Image (cartoon, rainbow, N blue to C red):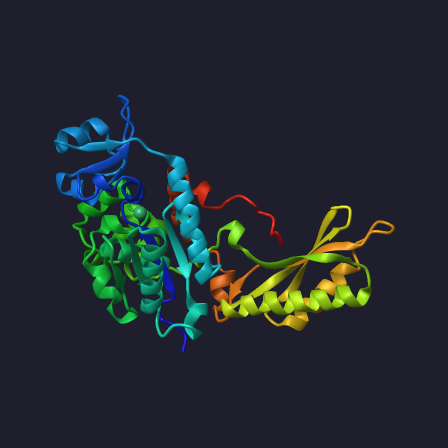
Length: 390
Ligand SMILES: [Mg+2]
């Protein structure tokens, strides 16, 4: 049985503040923000203790100090947050390579491939929260839903330190209660236009007569809003570049020279890498062979197949073909062999999810890119665009 709600949105609670509290436990339970102290400083992260005072991230620090007497301001330590973020994303990728980072402390995970290991996605979310708690000593919230959009809304409501699973059957009721401004793409101007139509909640949006919404916000935006209001969000989880491959490589104790030795090493690699691929519930389109010779000269050769594969023999045949394209220097032996698989997709992902790029979603993707830019999503893995067998 496939999961009806295969998307998780995992979001750390007051991430920078909680990292600081690990280093200085005296900050626990106290009104803490992380941020600068200069005249133009803003709040980078707000603890839950200061939120009742209306203190939020991105607020000017001077306003935060006025709103919350006794506010404790801790200067940011980006390297500590990056380090915690690295560990967090490593942990996500132990569950699945289908991890799409939104910022240093939040990501979408497509967990449909894990259905053989867990009874339901709620259990997966609980397991992830527990591992984060055990290994990073940090609180995280998880939203579970059928789509990215609903999963993100769900994690917001699960905060702090909770999990909310919005089942498909309850999704419309969940959405109907939301303020329209919670829909992606509803900025100040759209919000004002909707208010003029008497629209405050998502449910109100559904009752606007056809044509009226289109005239108020434009046709494509209206279609986009109607989709969101109905919970339609076909966008797949797009793994970060560096997570887009699974690879196995091995440096041999003794350099290899005979064809038989090389064949048997590659067969073993193909078995191992496809086992990992299948365990994650994935298939791969692109196979990369990495060869390093006894003079430390390294070459990689890749082939993208007509269809995706997950069996060892298909990968093995491909790497043997790729091996013919590798020319070793005279007298050189092989020191290292690696196989990388990329172009990963979930085994039971409907074809439309892979193929479709609906233009209406471009604005949402742009909005997400802005979030990434603002919060330094580059730290979450835009580096290493080349599928690397290493
Ligand atoms: Mg967060």
